[in-house]
Length: 380
Image (cartoon, rainbow, N blue to C red):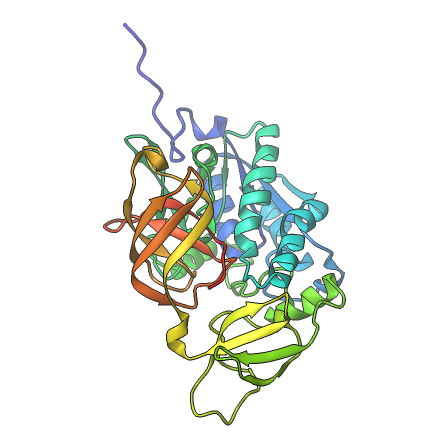
């Protein structure tokens, strides 16, 4: 008679926790610290890894950044408290080439990039994941608020139980192969308070540590200052022009503006509220117009990562819901594949402020599953 298969542990692997090595990506925050502590308490062979992603000279005293010097210290302290090894890996060159340079160039091109997605895609879930495999880990766990569930065709990506904490918009580019290896132990928790309660139960010093707010290499949210530092001379002045052709004023650089922006335009005294509707980088023009000009129904999307059970191009249309900004709820749409990695997305209700450089993430209309997504790539 064949032997019964070994029972699955809490990470879905067929062996005891003590024989299961897990690399935990530790940012120094409360989320990843709780993941590491919980897995260690359950008896897993935990290895903590923290990435040094950029020059810490200007960031040592800065709170709210994911990988500043203070955060490396906090991650190391959690590892010492819980009794598992911890390593710091210097990924500065990788991060600059894969994330920061594209971020600057995208802004200079009039787009509004989302560097956190590229960091997950190109650094954490690619290079760090390979490092985890080199360490003979059976899987890699992170503190992201998202769920991995097993479906009939394999591992599926699902939104977090707590909609207020859900990070699925930033993780749409996770591939099926990566999903096989990744684990997200916090995705089922009902709230961030539940995470902090676990941190307190484990006695972690980071239990009350504030959440990070900014992009880690953009202090105080000042994108333009970072871009000017990376690309000197990039903030050239130009005209602010109404969509009807009227010159309304001057600006101090296209990089200071984003599609949909209303405040801070410096063109007061007009009878109608105006919004940025287009960034003409070549002409150094910021084009403004009434709010209705922001409404978009058709969105071209490329670099699609598809997480469905059948090939993306096996259907002419996919009735799904999409998010075009991380802060907005999914809206009903029809996705029409043009190739395996490109599509036209038709929104059933027009959205305002759709911007090149943002992600368009695909959701099931009737449950929590994420079907992947792609990048919005053309101006309107």
